[in-house]
Image (cartoon, rainbow, N blue to C red):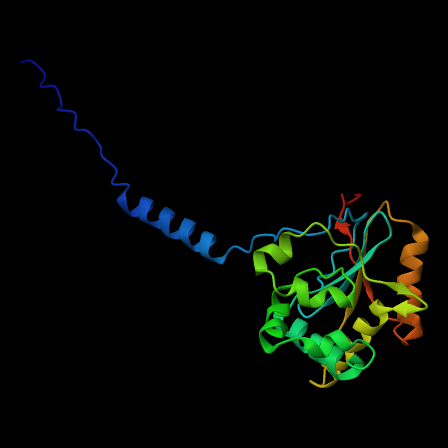
Length: 209
């Protein structure tokens, strides 16, 4: 009697559910991802093996390779509070501050990196947020003894925190090719204001086993 050959059946795997899950995960990561913003000033930070996370509400002083100083604040409402503090504390010293409109003050919340003289503020805040943060013409904030605008911004930022009962942390982000004296100038400005605790921002380097 001849053997009957078994009928082979095709095995089909329904991938519909797997595809749905893949698209759901992709959508989740796209919606929750935080893209690195375009930096108006390129700072090539030195490498280190420190892994301490910087605070969210941070006042960062950047020093480029030419030794120019800039500042940035990670929280938009802190930027607005700092500008209002500047107007309150230094409106007489810098009369242009008192000419700013409410709309311009609100726009300051969009300024990710500030590196101008104070008298340039009105024209800067007349630009759109995209134009403000794509401007590559930053010249740095004056910080010499006769016109220490950077020191005044630091005072204003700290005062805005005091008004809320918090101590605004400060960080220095120096380019690895920056003149050491320029970074020392920033540290001395902080010391003159009794600020002895601050972070140094670096790039995470390779760990040594």
